[in-house]
Amino acid sequence: MTPSDFVRLLLDPIRLAVAGDAVAGSSDIAALAARLGVDERAVAEARGKLAAAGLMDGDMLDRDALRAVAQALPTDPPASESVVDGPWSAEEVDVLGRFFSGGRLQSIPANLTKRRVILERLAQEFEPGLRYDEADVNFRLQLFYHDYASLRRYLVDEGMMDRADGVYWRTGGRYEDFDASPGRNGA
Figure 1 (spheres, rainbow, N blue to C red):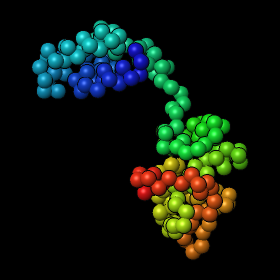
Figure 2: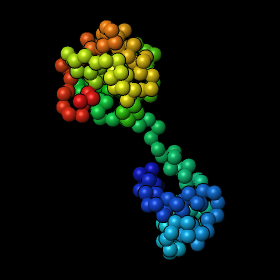
Figure 3: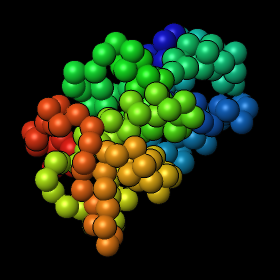
Figure 4: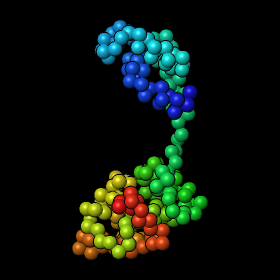
């Protein structure tokens, strides 16, 4: 069973309740049906579908089947397309893919070259020529990473942003790559 099949199977609330009940051990169809407010037949059918998929061993959830599903999950989800949109080189896409999971930055690279790639991507969130107060910069950066203060400091230190009196503006990065389409760069 693939992880996608597993999720599809458990999207049904009755099957999910049966699986949850079976985690603790033997489950009682009548008691579960009463708690859910459905007839016993619906619970029995849900249990049957879980058994047919190999997730139930009698009245109990098959923990080995769950482990197999967990092992089939990808270890490194690809970076979301919005993170790698733009004319990035193959090496840069690889760096972005290693440090972003979905749309979130997982860690700040210690390696300066890799960190610059990450900072170049984050600089794309700020439109050239606009001024941003510190709260807005913090908000935009915390959408990507919990330590937004470090990201803000690195952007300034690397010359991609500048600041004065609590106001920030973009001073570096790839200006020609800026995409002002709706939903991009915080617009």
